[in-house]
Image (cartoon, rainbow, N blue to C red; front, top):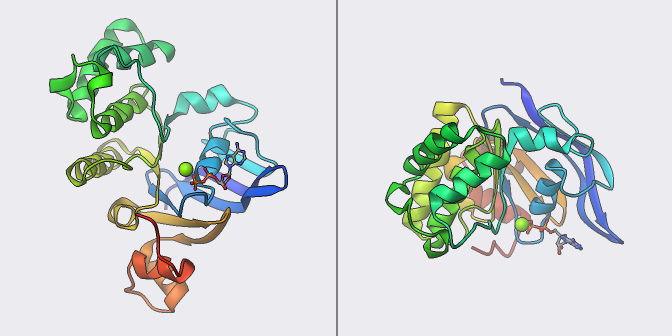
Length: 250
Ligand code: ADP
Ligand code: MG
């Protein structure tokens, strides 16, 4: 079993009296595709923001690559690529410009930045749109550019917050295949949040089910099936429905 790369201990975030994340304990291992699953408002994004040092925990601790993001936000920023729910680009500039801009911010030398930008555009299937302004990209294309933007600094972990929401099925398929390829060929650790059960089941090695700021369950599908039903063989939808009687918003 590979080493832990993200460790959350009793992680809690309160907004005044409201508890958005409630004593979460969780370990993500190097090279895993790990899914954060749960309905809107369950606490997935808030947990991610605490991992990145973008919001402060009220209680508990976070370690990412052994680093405390609150104390060393730049150390985490160097090692972790983050694709937010709504990624912003320079919309009146093309894909190559946007990637090179990010490369500069990460102190990547100019000639290397250009080569890497072109390679990554090819990897995410945007080579034909490289000279098109980002503002003209579809939602699916923006998410793929976002993934290239995350990868340009060669991160150890990619944290993708609802990366497939609003993309058509074909676009989702190619996005998920890309994630699998990055794990298999580059050993990237991927944390992927979604409220789509089928997508999570398709690509994730392990899953954490969030509900109202709490972790309901963590494990691979087999372990979750055993935990919930006392036997293996149940799919994620059956497992999930045990926690959410009304089903999930897709
Ligand atoms: P998810 O990503 O699972 O949809 P979030 O982590 O965004 O959920 O939100 C969890 C809960 O915390 C929600 O009820 C949300 O309204 C609340 N919340 C998130 N950010 C803030 C904030 N800055 N101030 C107050 N409440 C917040
Ligand atoms: Mg969210």
